[in-house]
Length: 118
Image 1 (cartoon, one colour):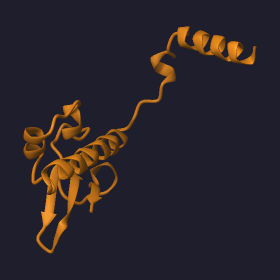
Image 2 (image 1 turned 90 degrees about the vertical axis):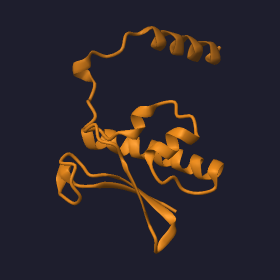
Image 3 (image 1 turned 120 degrees about the horizontal axis):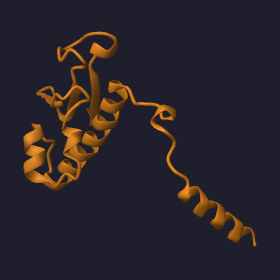
Protein backbone atom coordinates (compact mmCIF):
# COMPACT_ATOMS: atom_id res chain seq x y z
CA UNK A 1 0.00 0.00 0.00
CA UNK A 2 2.88 2.36 0.80
CA UNK A 3 4.39 1.81 -2.66
CA UNK A 4 1.04 2.70 -4.26
CA UNK A 5 0.88 5.91 -2.23
CA UNK A 6 4.41 6.89 -3.24
CA UNK A 7 3.67 6.11 -6.88
CA UNK A 8 0.51 8.24 -6.76
CA UNK A 9 2.45 11.09 -5.14
CA UNK A 10 5.08 10.95 -7.91
CA UNK A 11 2.39 11.00 -10.60
CA UNK A 12 0.66 13.98 -8.97
CA UNK A 13 3.96 15.87 -8.69
CA UNK A 14 4.65 15.21 -12.37
CA UNK A 15 1.28 16.74 -13.26
CA UNK A 16 1.94 19.99 -11.39
CA UNK A 17 2.89 22.94 -13.57
CA UNK A 18 6.46 24.25 -13.25
CA UNK A 19 6.98 27.20 -10.92
CA UNK A 20 6.63 30.64 -12.52
CA UNK A 21 9.80 32.22 -13.90
CA UNK A 22 9.91 34.64 -10.99
CA UNK A 23 10.26 31.68 -8.58
CA UNK A 24 13.23 30.18 -10.46
CA UNK A 25 16.68 31.44 -9.67
CA UNK A 26 18.56 32.39 -12.80
CA UNK A 27 22.13 31.14 -13.09
CA UNK A 28 24.87 33.73 -13.21
CA UNK A 29 27.19 33.91 -16.21
CA UNK A 30 29.95 32.47 -14.04
CA UNK A 31 27.78 29.49 -13.00
CA UNK A 32 26.86 28.81 -16.63
CA UNK A 33 30.54 28.98 -17.60
CA UNK A 34 31.53 26.57 -14.79
CA UNK A 35 28.86 24.12 -15.97
CA UNK A 36 30.01 24.37 -19.58
CA UNK A 37 33.72 24.11 -18.77
CA UNK A 38 33.01 20.95 -16.74
CA UNK A 39 31.08 19.46 -19.67
CA UNK A 40 33.85 20.42 -22.09
CA UNK A 41 36.46 18.89 -19.77
CA UNK A 42 34.52 15.61 -19.95
CA UNK A 43 34.58 15.80 -23.75
CA UNK A 44 38.35 16.45 -23.64
CA UNK A 45 38.72 13.29 -21.54
CA UNK A 46 36.61 11.36 -24.05
CA UNK A 47 38.72 12.76 -26.90
CA UNK A 48 41.89 11.60 -25.13
CA UNK A 49 40.49 8.08 -24.73
CA UNK A 50 39.54 7.89 -28.43
CA UNK A 51 42.54 9.67 -30.01
CA UNK A 52 45.23 8.91 -27.43
CA UNK A 53 46.26 12.53 -26.81
CA UNK A 54 44.72 15.72 -25.47
CA UNK A 55 42.91 17.95 -27.96
CA UNK A 56 44.83 20.96 -29.21
CA UNK A 57 41.78 23.05 -30.06
CA UNK A 58 38.00 23.16 -29.97
CA UNK A 59 37.98 22.37 -33.70
CA UNK A 60 39.98 19.18 -33.14
CA UNK A 61 37.30 17.99 -30.71
CA UNK A 62 34.44 18.84 -33.07
CA UNK A 63 36.12 17.06 -35.98
CA UNK A 64 36.97 13.92 -34.01
CA UNK A 65 34.12 13.00 -31.68
CA UNK A 66 30.37 13.59 -31.77
CA UNK A 67 29.19 16.34 -29.41
CA UNK A 68 25.50 16.46 -28.45
CA UNK A 69 25.47 20.04 -27.19
CA UNK A 70 27.86 22.38 -29.00
CA UNK A 71 26.91 25.18 -26.58
CA UNK A 72 29.55 23.74 -24.25
CA UNK A 73 32.20 25.11 -26.64
CA UNK A 74 31.35 28.70 -25.64
CA UNK A 75 31.45 30.43 -22.29
CA UNK A 76 28.42 32.36 -21.05
CA UNK A 77 29.72 35.52 -22.75
CA UNK A 78 29.68 33.82 -26.17
CA UNK A 79 33.44 33.30 -26.51
CA UNK A 80 35.08 30.02 -27.40
CA UNK A 81 37.01 28.36 -24.59
CA UNK A 82 40.78 28.34 -25.05
CA UNK A 83 42.69 25.07 -24.81
CA UNK A 84 46.29 25.49 -23.70
CA UNK A 85 49.06 22.94 -23.30
CA UNK A 86 52.51 23.83 -22.07
CA UNK A 87 55.65 22.10 -23.33
CA UNK A 88 56.97 21.60 -19.80
CA UNK A 89 53.80 19.65 -18.91
CA UNK A 90 52.94 17.62 -22.04
CA UNK A 91 50.44 15.38 -20.25
CA UNK A 92 48.30 18.26 -19.03
CA UNK A 93 45.99 20.82 -20.62
CA UNK A 94 44.03 23.80 -19.43
CA UNK A 95 40.56 24.74 -20.66
CA UNK A 96 40.12 28.47 -20.09
CA UNK A 97 37.43 31.14 -20.17
CA UNK A 98 38.89 34.63 -19.88
CA UNK A 99 35.78 35.91 -18.09
CA UNK A 100 33.38 38.72 -18.96
CA UNK A 101 36.06 41.02 -20.38
CA UNK A 102 37.69 38.31 -22.52
CA UNK A 103 41.17 39.27 -21.27
CA UNK A 104 43.61 37.12 -19.26
CA UNK A 105 43.60 37.81 -15.52
CA UNK A 106 41.02 40.01 -13.86
CA UNK A 107 38.82 39.84 -10.79
CA UNK A 108 35.17 39.06 -10.15
CA UNK A 109 33.23 38.40 -13.34
CA UNK A 110 36.32 39.42 -15.35
CA UNK A 111 38.41 36.68 -13.67
CA UNK A 112 39.57 33.63 -15.60
CA UNK A 113 37.76 30.32 -15.12
CA UNK A 114 40.14 27.41 -15.64
CA UNK A 115 39.84 23.61 -15.73
CA UNK A 116 43.21 21.83 -15.31
CA UNK A 117 43.18 18.35 -16.82
CA UNK A 118 45.88 15.74 -16.11
